[in-house]
Amino acid sequence: MKKNFTLLISLLIAGMVYGQKADVNQFKPEFINWYNKDLAQDAVMGASVDRLYNEVLPNLKPGKTVVVAVIDGGVDVDHVDLKGKIWVNEEEIPSNGIDDDKNGYIDDIHGWNFLGAQSGEGVHFENVEYARIVRSKEGTDYAKAKEMYDLELAKRKKQKLNYSKFKSAWEKAKHVIKSNTGITVKDQEDLAEVKSNNENVIRAKQFLMKKFSQGVNDEMINNLLTNTNKYLNYHLNLDFNPRNLVGDDPLNFEDRNYGDNDVKGKRSDHGTSVAGVIAAHRNNDIGIDGIAENVKLMVLKSTPVGDERDKDVALAIIYAVDNGAQIINMSFSKEFSPQKEFVDKAVAYAEEKGVLLVHGAGNKGQNLDLNERFPSDIYLNGKLATNWLNVGATAMTLDKEIVGVFSNYGREHVGIFSPGVNIVSLDSTNTYRQTSGTSIAAPIVTGIAALILSYYPELTPQELIAVLMESSYKVKKPKKVLVPNLKAEKREKGIFTDLSKSGGIVNAYNAFKYLESYSIAGKK
Image (cartoon, rainbow, N blue to C red; front, side, top):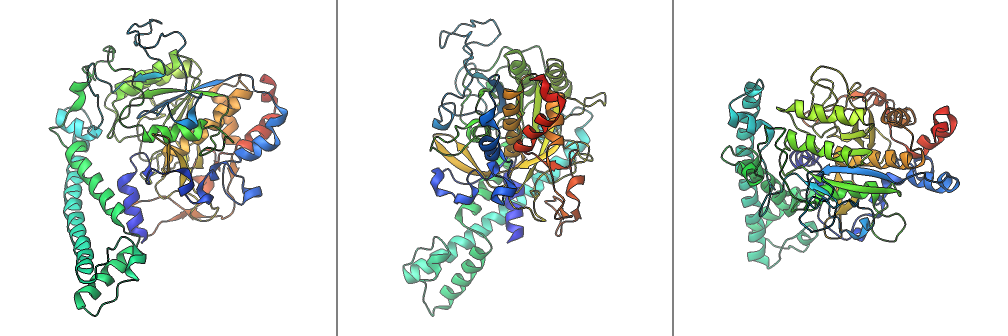
């Protein structure tokens, strides 16, 4: 059973693991808003956001509304739980086809789509970065990228064959039962109705019973096949190059006249989930409770289904800084960054202008101190960005499995952990979805940072990072936890405080109490 779920996680979380779109009431109540709860009061390892609202914030007055940029795959700006929370460019007149504010982007009312086309639909699927490097046959990373590409291609082809064979056996077993008993098997409960002395039916029932007990179902099988086909048809397909739809030169940083203002686009599920935990309306009897009340979300679409381009990420960061964002959430990562100098320029610009960058650490179950992923807090010259915070993911129960099995970690390059397993958040078209990943852990930290900044607006990114890390909940019991690893049959144990720079899990209540206790609060 564990092996099945680990496999599903490793294949499906380029950003997050997704369940089905649904009404929020269809999820288990214990998973809804658990990230807002408090360990002492609720026996749940949340970020103590509700406790902060109940005990501290009634005595404080916010000083400003904070603009948070969500660089992602798009956000459903019309979601009912985000009503009034989306940033509006007041200097731009909607739909007049004119760049009113002279910022280089026409009708950028809520942000910009760097994947948009000059005419028609823009980029939805993309290659992974190492496939693009292999296609180019250039660069210092070519040999490493080619090795990774060949291994991944062989693995995906083998998976497709195995999954197809398994699905055929799965469907055949259900057909045997249907043709002999008239019973359509949809889940394990249906098998209880199957009564037969036919040996074929008995074998089919035993096969299905075993697989259902291991967590296998139609959705899992279809997801595995769909994901594998995406890799073969798009991510690893060297003949697939959708960038011509955009019309720019992705290797020329000065070629910036591209994209459109469709910040929702075709793929807004991921970004909408990110936006939800940051800013969904609290206590409105709809859906979930986001974290920050006094916030506006600027939407910047740069992340396709596949790997984002360095140039798009860099220009999205610059756009966010130039248009007033004070915090930028980035829930994406990849193995290579061939135009890293573009991103470095943008990160340095954000650092200079006092903008905080919050980044999901990634979902490979790796030590970032040994395996750098991109975008990265390390500049090409070896220096570290001081406005950067990498975030790992934790679960709701304080036990040896508190760290998400998929979460990257690192004493030097992961700053803090945050709730990121089985989080119910928003999805497009006024629906909701349960997700896991550092992609959802990062915006929880972003939401808390925005909440802090709305009450303490003079804090610098460096001070915000210090507050979040110093006030984090330090896990002392259990003394040892399972260290993330998606490949090991048996995971090693380690001390939780050794898995990140802060050694803790973000805690909103503790952060405000920390600010009350130290002179830094006098900057309000």
